[in-house]
Image (cartoon, rainbow, N blue to C red):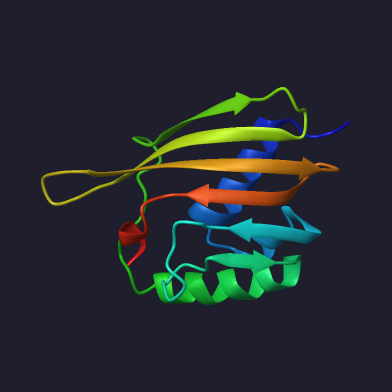
Length: 135
């Protein structure tokens, strides 16, 4: 039985945003996957383009290590998402509002991710968010 978009998305979020586990995150992707953040500048702290599961694993491990110094974590109870299916069974879109608790005022980061799936794994992910939020 193949995974639903919801199962794929939730596994991806758990491995990445919730646990920052680069090994588990990489296993969400196909061997030849491409992970892109097209709005990120080439010299940004978040990788702009990663090709292949091992590059995803290594780059995200380095990013999570750097991010560990940042005490800012998402508030998952306040955050939310909506998944949109498309005419292609291999493509879905995630519309996400991630809330970070702040001193007196929350910060909401809104983003859109486009997932292309193959055999229950992410073959291509395009992550669209405001780059200044990652620095």
